[in-house]
Image (cartoon, rainbow, N blue to C red; front, side, top):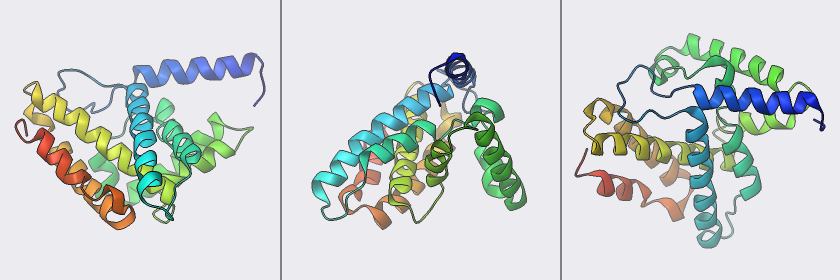
Length: 195
């Protein structure tokens, strides 16, 4: 990428699309969340979790810069695909494989001249990549915070996503990050009066 009109067009396109694509589009939400806001919170949570892991888990250190880059691009493909329902991605392996191909092609279109962003984007689904797993954990914490706040406002339609997020947090934290093992219980404890 270089500084020119195409770069500004790229910024404008990603901004317009991610800020207008609603998450949880098949669920009634009291305060809708767009993909841009979600990406910000995932990046913020990632930064804090990196600091905790790096402060408490030496020698298992994650690269904070790489984690932040992964967090920033982790849902960029949704600028063209929209927010696909999670159960559609998890319940149908054939659809999931086709969607992975489509999303990779979208990322190649978005970042045609610079593949490093595609490299970061791919890490979030790489179960062997420590930085990708940390961002996946942050993504699940963000899911729990959003759905927990919806429940606090009285929206019980979103309890299902909260419970899925909690299960996935436990799996990632307990298997990869000893310093974060207690995060699942903290999330459950904090939101228990509403969920």
